[in-house]
Amino acid sequence: MGKIIINDVTLRDGSHAISHRLTKEHIASYAKAADSAGIHIVDVGHGNGIGASSLQVGLSLLSDYEMLEVARNNLINSKLGVHVIPGFATIKKDLSRAFEIGVDVVRVASHCTEADTTERHISYAREKGKEVYGVLMMSHMASKEVLLEEALKMQSYGAEGIIIMDSAGAYLSNDVKDRISFLVSTLKIPIGFHSHNNLGMAIANSITALESGAKILDGSARGFGAGAGNAQLEVLVAVLEKMRYETNIDLYKVLDAAEIAEEEIIEAIPTIKSISIVSGLSGVFSGFAKHVMRVANEYKVDPRNVFFELGKRKVIAGQEDIIVEVALQLSNKQNREAE
Image (cartoon, rainbow, N blue to C red; front, side, top):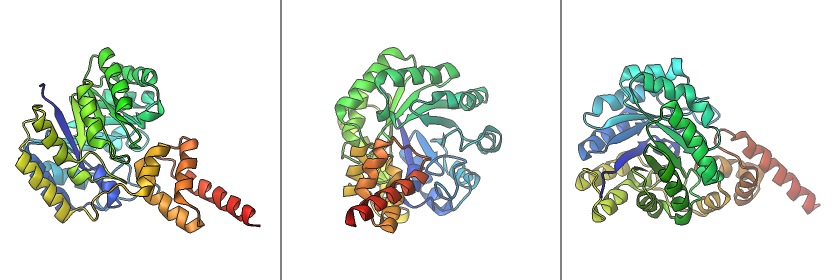
């Protein structure tokens, strides 16, 4: 079996699950454990990436630079990675500063049909000699043909690999096989897969991605992430070892890292709750769960109806304001029907 690259998103996607309240102690402790385990890349920062801390999507306890500096000081062998969404992150203010701190890997992300927004950020990161990947978020919202068109754009900008994100946990294994195998057959650069566990498919879908030709997989300790969470990293490593894939990751030490995450960082282990299932079925970003529950409670409407209406409108991350609009409309409809 060929070597697989593992990207650990515990200190980035996991930030969603604790309202972006990672502390320096959290980052130092987990980064050191992940490094000791031999994790290839450790992603660090606000859940929506560097530059994203805001009232709209959540304020971080620490600045991007504080988080990255602590991680850099505790990563010896593992590469330090960041998630970048143009519109949140600027080149001058955010990327250049991150490079000064010592970031090794940059993942430049866009909605699955908007790869053209990533050109400047990908090109800049390559010019600075960084390892650069293009990321297509909410990929279930596009056909494999459209994903290929967008991935080819990122490849032309200089991306050294393409990561397909199942941001809503909406995929079944056939969806993964169909898209990943199609991209692998056409692109000249490696393909990666980032799963969410809304329908309980995160590990199975990750393995399907590998069997379809993917070379990069994301995971987080205990599945720590928004909503139902991500592929559970320690389970993923164990399954890969059983299947004889080469990772060079120390299983015992990655299990130890997961214990540290649970004891020191995670407030509640991600589980597949009813609202997570609805999020996956409606194809809405997992990170919306807390916002939807809060707004639905305020307007006294069923959060499941909010999710399905958001799905009909094809709402994506960054459009959190529409949650209130939908809840208000559902509330008004309820009141009219009650009259």
